[in-house]
Image 1 (spheres, one colour):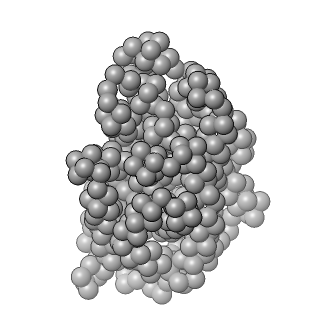
Image 2 (cartoon, rainbow, N blue to C red; image 1 turned 180 degrees about the horizontal axis):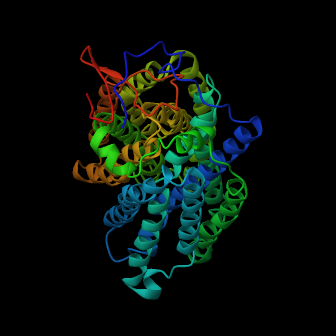
Length: 469
């Protein structure tokens, strides 16, 4: 059982008087960095392919017998199914990430995501198979989400545990650099295929995009199969300090931190997937820019987002996770309003500026801070489960339904963007408040079984195996 911790020490010191864990060999750190980066690139590649297809072609291919607005809603509804599957995948894989190790889960999730995306490229359309076609699409989307349910969380946990003290933020941020790379690859694939004539795009071009995921899958598998377990996990297993039922222990003993992680992620997910998915259809259908320009905008935004991810991860190493996150969240509270004003000018210059800033702060940069922050919040007993469950339940509440809610608000309010901006700001307000209640964790010792101590309304709150207080 865990024991209640003492007052929080200075952030640059271990959380307890125990000796720190053995340093991970530099070669293993580099291998973990590449495995985390490439694997998350696949996840985002798959999701960008699907999200862009939802905005551009799926309403015609799989939901042709409804109005264009209803077709977009149906496409985004199928998109949301993947996010509903994520906590189920998180629950399933979390049982093993803290028992069998990080590598086993990361290889399994990689293959499940890659094969599900490949299968989408082989599906019949509605004209070829009727109602069976959208049903199979939803099934494949479920497989994507089930696999993604432990992907980013696993990569973040692996890199945080492998990183040297003082460099966790920048190393774990490579997960979101990988996500940006996946967005670049996905947007680039769509930009290329949209050069085809319309009939070829709708017949085989879209299939080629999804089938190309097998190349990214093989590249990611090459790096992940050579992974070793982190020394943090190995030592915890040697000391029998890992939980036999990690999911149960998270819900029993880590509820407060689980709530904090969930609400912080909800705010970021709503903004991130509104920018990455909903904005594509908004630019095409409401602003009425050329559909072929949309993937190019997403591509440029993702390049800047990847740069911002690494920079903000490094800043969190210098100034602390909590303070840097609060600054980003504060900006995102008001950013939706100038974003929509810029988009509605119809000027490509302003559209690029708005989307670049959105990608830098909401899509990759803000999330990059949490890649080291969330693993540091939890003790060694159930770190993987705590991070995964907190993020993936939030994925349903935030990212999965964000494009659907945004599209519904646009429809309900006769094309007005104001309700969408209010929705984005409200979600980020939840994240801002949660961060105010979170502890600072920079350089916390990771081998200790206790969760991070933190303060709530000025009173010290200690997380232990006996409860939240």
